[in-house]
Structures are given as C-alpha cells and as structure tokens.
Length: 175
Image 1: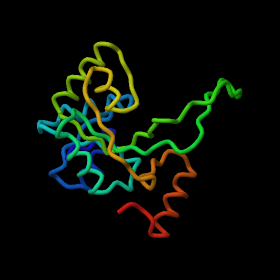
Image 2 (image 1 turned 135 degrees about the vertical axis):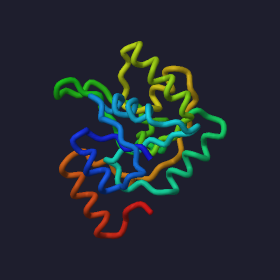
Image 3 (image 1 turned 45 degrees about the vertical axis):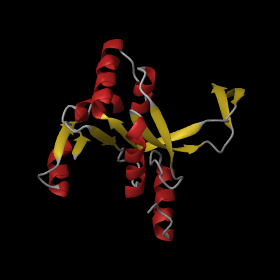
Image 4 (image 1 turned 120 degrees about the horizontal axis):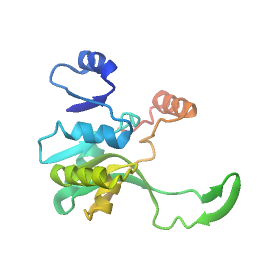
C-alpha cells in the first residue's frame, strides 16, 4: 500500500499504518499527488482511493478490479439524480441534460503502465484533470463504470461531516 500525504504527516501515517506502508509526498494538487504515489507502484494493477471517501467497501474495490478484464480503467460512479444547472456568477444560463451523466467516485482501478503513461503525457501537455479516469479517457484508454453507492460520501464541506456522522450513528454506512 502506498499512502500519499504531506511530508510533515509521514511519521504519523507510518505509526498508524505500520512499517509496511510505503509513503509518497503529496503534490501541489490531486493529480500531482497521484503521480508521486505512482512512482512507488510496480504492480500490474493499481487501485486509487481518496481518503475523503471513508465509506469505501471491499466490494467496491473488487468490482473495479473485476471490470479491468477488458478495460484499462474501472471507476465506481453513481448516476446523476438531480437537475444540474450551468451558472455564470449567480445567473442560471442553462440546464444540463443529465441523461447518461454519472458522478465519479473512488476507488478507481487501472492498469498501472497505462496510467503512468497518461500521467507522463499530461505533464508534457500541461493537462490538469480532476480524476485519473479523465487522463485515460483523454489519452485513448478505455474506462468502464461500475455502479457505486450514494453512501460512498465525499467529505469536502463541514456539512458533509454531519452527514457522515449521521450515517455511522444510524448504521447506514456502506458495508
């Protein structure tokens, strides 16, 4: 397991996870952090998961790994179930057709060599994306969606912590 964290937290991570954990330095952004972590990976397959999604399950990881049989990448995602508005400033300038739209989550599994190549090309092209599947998509890799779970919350905002705590308290967190 490779954990990417700011250097000042490496001792804490090592004490929490043990000496068998490989550490990599955080980058300036998510993409840089993943690229740094990939430098420590020599396996054929890599699973990338963001710590901001604490309700990941073994079943999610397994599902993405099984989907790699015929693809370069497999991601957990959930269909968009709300109306999406395009906004400029505070003005609504359009409504996005949500047909076929999915919210990407992690874990995301990839053939390591293909992902490393996409990251190298992105550096050369100065291309920045918000997830690794987007790199594979742009550079011609095949990515498949595995249905996710809305309980696989991304904790970003203060209100997300309250929702996560409510899930844990009610026993409705992902299993």
